Image (cartoon, rainbow, N blue to C red; front, side, top):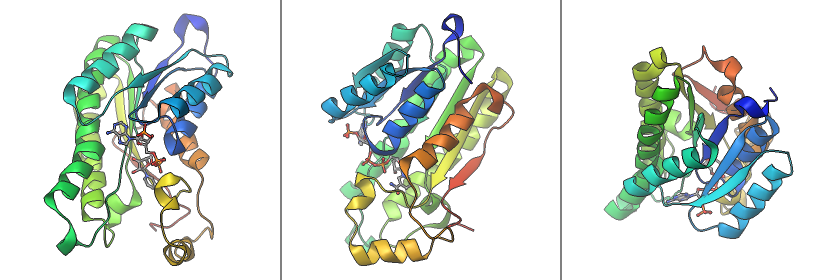
Length: 250
Ligand code: NAP
């Protein structure tokens, strides 16, 4: 829904420089929201994404922050609210993998994935909720995964982080429903991005064969679901997990 200057909603997307995060930035900008593009290391890509958002007629800024740091997440949210006067939408999208079979997975492999994918979302959600409570309006969307629902060999750390995001989402939804703040998750299946580009051709073919739709998804497929949940019209939907997986998880 296009928005007017007198109430232009503001959205913060973690890991928004590239891949699914970039597509989410553009989809929300297309819907008239001002955009804060968070990045960890991809400064040039973040600036390019922000420029693409501005070309759609909204304001866009880039904010460097490592979501593993609670102080950095607090500042990220504060800087977004300072730039736009509000923060209406938080998309917890930043994520990493460190795949290994369980017996080879180190504590560091486990901790780093949990710190980025799950604790980062906790820090950002906590910081954003303070603003959203005062506004009596908020939309929080976390990018989970079908792996968080079903598990996956070689991804115990990643699956645990993505399952944890669903628990975080449902708990946040229950705590803040009465404040007009919704919290939902999307669970992408196999989406063509840098994260999946590292997979071997046999692994890719096996994944594709397991998708009833018969094809790998695109970042825009996930962004469309996030944009729906981020919109004002989705205000009566909370605590849900929307799979964007071509039927993979059925
Ligand atoms: P991607 O292209 O590798 O993007 C990951 C993003 O996360 C990057 O923008 C990266 O930022 C950011 N990031 C990583 N560590 C960070 C940190 N410590 N602080 C802040 N940002 C950090 O992968 P993607 O496929 O688009 O993944 C986006 C999300 O979708 C992830 O949560 C992923 O788990 C989820 N997902 C992906 C798939 C898939 O098939 N691709 C499926 C299910 C779920 P920098 O580049 O600036 O470092």
